[in-house]
Amino acid sequence: MAKSLLIISRQSPWSGPGAREALDIVLAGGAFDLPIGLLFLDDGVLQLAAGQNAKALQQKDLSANLQALPMFGVEELFYCAESAHARGLGQLSLDEAQPLATDQITALIDRYDQVITL
Amino acid sequence: MAAVSLIEFIMKFAIALFSAAHAPSSRRALLFAQAALAGGHEIVRLFFYQGAVFNASDAVVTPQDELDLPKQWRAFINDKQLDGVVCIAAALRRGVLNEEEAKRYQRDAISLSAPWELSGLGQLHDAVQDADRLVCFGGA
Amino acid sequence: MSTLHVLSHSPFGDDRLTSCLRLLGSADAVLLAGDAVYALQPDTVPFSALQARPVNLFVLVEDAQARAIEVPDWAEAIDYPAFVELSVRHAKVNSWL
Image (tube, rainbow over all chains, first blue to last red):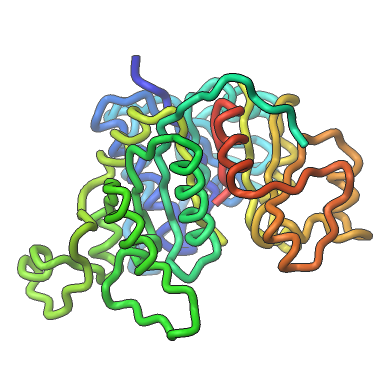
């Protein structure tokens, strides 16, 4: 049975390649049909803010890749409710991402075989 | 001190690095890797992602009186016959190219050579599947 | 299943330690490496936070020594062989990169 891998993405979308490179790990795993989960935590939840405009910074739009995740077989998508609340995020741009409370995140990390927090 | 374990577990480690050679975490990764082998464990792969691609760069020049981590990584990988894989996308983006990629993209600067291999993230996933433990080093 | 969390950033002006402690499972362990050992600087908020809660706390001895940080008796200073052993003892390692 394949080992499951949780990626915890903590970088904001426009602070460097971190957000994009975390997502690349997820997409590669999905492409290989591996059980991958993605959790947005701390500034990582800012990747899910609605109404962003990548073009204003001449950057690639990450939201297209995020929307494509279920198509890559990655359906375990989560975000930290407390991180989102602290950052004043209301409506998120990714409907498939489930909000998790702190104790649910502890349980989530426990559930996966391996984890990468970047 | 913690209790002595009576049973020796031999583990397969996948070690992934995310920061450049001058980051303290890269040195920690090397020392951890050495301790893992000294402890009788196996390293299935060393995977270099994000800024860690610079650990594999031939172009890094270190002053004589400083720790030369790229040189130490190379010696370690050669000596222990380990699999040192550098993520190709991360490397290209940061200007770390081997001969093949330099030719492909018509660049004069070749800064990566054996024992380092350029490959995709599939190799990271492969290592994660094969190993008992994944240990990541990076950030600071 | 327990997790070994590894922190390597200074706790001042960084939220990794706070987030890690918030998510910590009861059987989990925390290893302070690099600048994260500054969390053991007495009379600081991070020090109080760590002292106040029962955490299986480990410190990479070379980093404490380099920074003249004294390791309190409720934390354990370890070397690299012990770091390897810790990573074997816990089901997985979560480095907060």
